[in-house]
Length: 312
Length: 279
Image 1: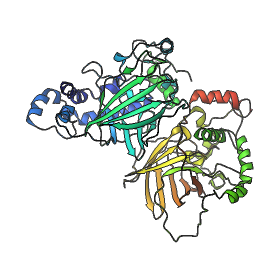
Image 2: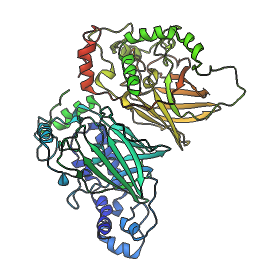
Image 3: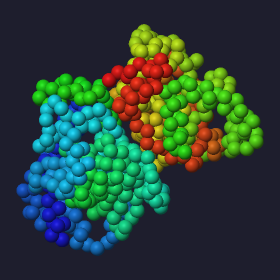
Image 4: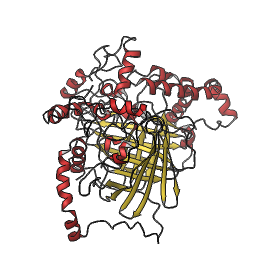
């Protein structure tokens, strides 16, 4: 209950900070989609501007009135009652952009703060990674996979505050990510994980309900991607677990657990991350395109003293 | 099997050599089909007695027969029906350096696929690669193995947008006209070709796809392109048949620039026909 009350602060933090993640977001993203999306988000934030006083007034308001429609219901309210949670995860979801530090936006569905120690293999991979962001970022030598427009995949795909849509059909749950226009499928027809899958960017995923939690297990990754923006490696031994709970109509909780004994000395358990239903949003087309990435280098990254045109 | 299919598709796309093998296989197809009975029920164009299914769901694979009988080809978009170019279209076509066809020049190719540009309609429909159709309320979703591309076709009655931002996939709406599912798409960018031969796609393109499920195992698709900026006339292709593949699942097949370059170094260049990919 105490935990739920803490989480209830997040929707308000989200509103006050809404535009900022788009501005602070690391510049590994193509120019034109970024600009377009920033404008979109700013517009949306402007529409919500009348709610900016909410964090201040929230205690008063919540004591006096119901939350206005469009504002996320608090998880605490759902926890106060005992009906089972919905097993329908459909909809467009957007991660609340609050990060590790309260009130400061961050991208931490995969939380750097809970990362276990690296194995020697993991350490070597980590040392070779030259991220665009974080304490180890060195301008001019960045080698993020997205700089080459490599396909993105879990768990990094789930890490960043970008919208995704879930569609449930018989035997499958489909996820559509705006980032990179990626789709993945999670098999729910009862099949087991494959014994020896070919390594892929997305891996092979099966899902099942455990009570009110939709549990997704994924194996069969290649080792070409990072788990986050900081260069933490993803090996082909990764067993990824995602745990989804629809806390209430407007709120989806996602917890990411990375069990990768080749790269980390123990399982990496990230704290749950909340997502808000966005019923009016549709997933836009946002591909990574090398030419646009090069243009972004010239117009934004280089003048800012950041990355050069990466390995292309 | 999926993996084998993926590799087969890949080779088919990138090299003409395997097509010769396919051609040989096709020569024996009549014999095989008469023996095994596995050939899907032949469509009967004149048979209009029963309404056709409005369920297009499933994994579909284009029949690989081409313009010449018995010769495989990639002709959901058929060059033989291409209208004359406008000056803009001609300039674009002249600037295109395809990997195949009469205008291919080894060492100078600039096909968008060589730098892993996202693929889009109509070209993503042109090649013999599997795709899956899923129908959900208000939408028809298409999943292409080629490039792991997915697209949305809105069927909730919305109109085409007035002034859409140009995109790789365009903006698509679909509706049923009798037993034909008609998809209209506008809002394309002009960075892709409509085929493998460099025929251009402008931002004025209005693409129409007409789907009919002729029987349980057979999907017919006809592609019509109205692109007044590039072509002096409407490009109407003959219908193309697709076979239901009930046991297939769409595999992961991304275009990855490093793999493209490695493929150029190990396969294309030794074969003498293909340059290093532009990076």
